[in-house]
Amino acid sequence: MNTISKTILKYEWKTFVRNRYQVVMLLASFVFGLYAIYYGQSEIDAQRETIVTITDLEDVEFSSYRDSFKGALESSAQEQMHDIASRPEFAWFRHGYHAILPPHDYAALAIGQRDLFRYYYRLTGMSLHYQLFENELANPVNLLAGNFDLSFVLIYLFPLLIIVFCYSSFSAEKENGTLPLLQVQSVSIGKIILLRLLFYFTIITGLALLISFIGLFASGDLLDAENRIPAIIWILGVVTYCAFWFALLFLIISFRKSSAFNAMIAAGLWLLFLIVVPALLNIIVTTKYPLSSTTLAGLTRRTGLENENDENESREVIMEFLSHEPGLAASDSLIHHNMPAKAYAAFTALKDINSNQEVTRYNLEVEKRSRWTKGFHWLSPSVNLQHLFAQVAKTDLETFLQFQKALTHFHGDITDFYFEKLFWDHPIQLEDYSNLPSFKIPPTHSNLYGVGTSLAKSGVMALIAFLVGFIKMKNQ
Image 1 (cartoon, helix red, strand yellow):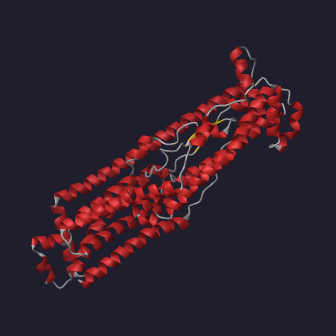
Image 2 (image 1 turned 90 degrees about the vertical axis):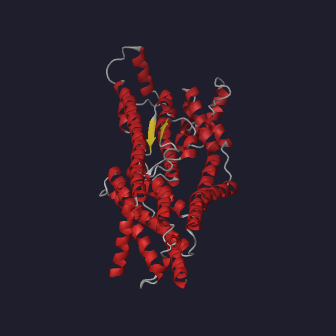
Image 3 (image 1 turned 180 degrees about the vertical axis):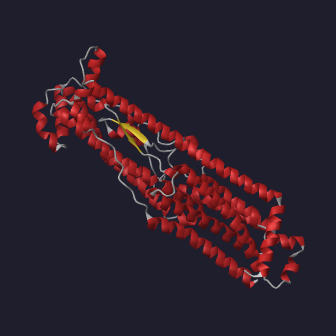
């Protein structure tokens, strides 16, 4: 770096230090970042506490079932507990298993969908769709207000900070009458502006990285295998995003207009990328792929056989169910034993079978909406980065769709376990509690191609804005 460049940067540093408003704004941004980390951690810690609580409840429940096999049954309560523990006609709809989507270490930094979709379910052998859709998936208040997590601070507030610091980098000299003095110097005005932007890029991006590192360290171990790549992606996303906004400011400044013009255009672009584009995409995708949960609402209504005491109706329901289950088909000879329990179990299973097509269609529409929206992320680096952060923290929509698919497989394991004993009239033994169904989420791997594409989109837009601004500034 030559002497002139050092002199310009030294002057910028002195000007920055003497401007108390800029220093206060940086400190305020730092405080906002720390609060956002605290807020995100408190939200995810509350979810972790809930997970511990429901896990303990499940352990206590099944411990009481195991204990009922030991010793004499001296009271009616003990006999009732043993019936629930050993008789499949009771156990299939009383035994509850918790399927949990644990938060990633970095979920606190980008809460994403975790406050909108359920991250745990208590499943029994009853209708899966009834249990999935019986509660509202989204909190309307959170949908409206969002979360003040670290991703919000970086995506929404830091561009405003960049605009405030840089919008008058050229126009202030012109308006203060010092531009002629700069123009007679040996260094070009374009280089002076670039050095100023580089100075503030170092300060503001450095602050964003400092806050990010604090959040990453506070949320998890960076040396952990599951955290290393997500942490690198987060850092690259922050640098690329800041570079885009500085390149955009450089492009605006290259027109050499007044400070008011620069501020108005920069604020308009902030509104465009963070408010208008997401709103338009939402309107278009809602129109293009309309979703109606009316049919799903019917699945949440508790229903049963029209006449549970009618043996012919019960037999028909059981036989229809057995036609879908080859492994249980031969149990029809035992149909008269525990017929009401078998008929109700068969009815709930048939309800899932009959509604499966509608649920599958609904989920496919959700996936189509998600794919279509991702195809237009290049329109807004802000939306693009928000999705990237959600991918890193595993709080994106795709994660919850995978969770729902895993729930379907787990529910199948539950019904297979209990229905085999119910329809074959086999009691549940103590040793069976060593082989209970357990929920497992299939391992997911980082989509490096998708991540690279997201980073490339922001990088390309930043490069284009910079090159256009550079050419325009040089020509003038």
